[in-house]
Length: 253
Length: 193
Length: 193
Image (cartoon, rainbow over the protein chains, first blue to last red):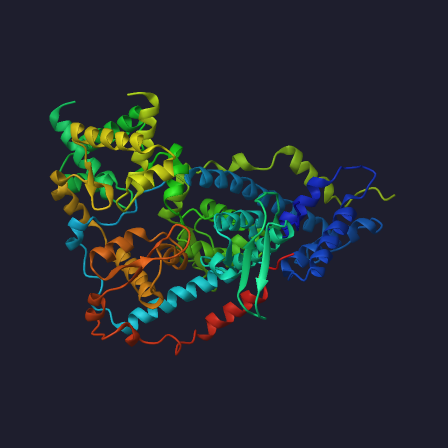
């Protein structure tokens, strides 16, 4: 038994717009801009319902689309625009140019991703200086006070917290619960039970903990484990009760 | 191979073996007191030998120097042995931002946001933390915004010898079909039903 | 040498290449799913080959297994190379790692890497060699990773009687800018659907 929860995510308004455009089957008797503008707004509404913060950038593009749409619906007449005001026609040209430019980088980022993937198969030696040559490395502790050491530790922790929190709100990191299901299955191999704390000892961030918890629930649903908790907020025990079967589950976190 | 040539090759191999960063030819010349031509010859000898005998490692030119890497064919075994943190996945947002910085460097955060259409500060900070980009000074305009560029680690992580090795950006322009689709869909002069 | 035998030799060579600790035979069997006899054969093949061709490195049997070392004949060149490096980066990495071990001990290499965001094995080895940290047993989880803590020498260097005398962390409060950044990011952080 497997389940699928997937929310389409976009890297920004241009990404969304390109996606909507690529799905269109162009019909010359239709008014494309009206359709695109509607779909764009529908998407924004749907993510608002999901309580995701909407970037002002999304709204700005929505306004531009509505502007172009409005101009297309009004009877044709020569309108006069100020020099520093952008006409809907100009706004459209700018938008097209920006979309083309963005698409170029989106394309090349796929190429870079492939290179990164290929490169990940190469490992370097990271052994450090061999014992025999250790005396050539300067003394790390010279001029270092305890206060400095403490400061360093706090700085690393802080840097880490910020980078964990700075997950871009428009591009959440997808975690596959199935991966965590497999991880838990491996950790339960050959044992009767383990506490949730033991299972998650190496989780480095909250999102990962949540994914582990979802994975435990999934295993419970599949009848592979039973759960026990002696008291409220007490330790959760994961008890092996069935055979290991793998299915597919994906969730976007 | 002459004895001398083999000796130079072995000395240089030992240097690659202990180094935790790419070594360039001038540093090797300096350390070994051997001329540039002989060093180049030795590097070629080593690279050929590893290739020919299909060893567990390879010599590669990367980020302005040469460095030993494990052979990619054996990656699955190495992964079983060690845990790697340097190859954590990059998100689509990070890849897009990195592409922009790589091709347009030096760029400001505003330049990046203008191309992506979305504020990219969080992604820029993440890339800074991971050492893939760095500050390159400030732009001489109002507000003097910080300029960003890619690092040596970026080159290493993507297996590039230098930034010039990036494929030409023009090759990635959307094709005619996509352009036409964009134009048509944002057309305002459509027939009203 | 049969093709199979050469392949096993190359896989094992790649493992030695990336490993910063002695590897014992049973660990190699486990990682490669190859039998003990074949692994021993491969180790012998490698050692013979390095000896015969007088490479820049050697395979040595040390306490607990086998490990690659640079060839002692080339030590003068390696010394010159190490002296030519800028050690500021290493010092920074070493101090960061030491501060994590001091405050979070006992910790595994994985814990350290997770906190620093990069693989820190080389630095951990250097600190071990320097006698500032030591192994403190093994964690009772999968893989039984080694736990590290600070040594008496570490305490002595700072004139501490015990590790409890380390300055406490809690008096610290992040400055306003950082706090604001964290809060803002929390507000926009991801949700699970």
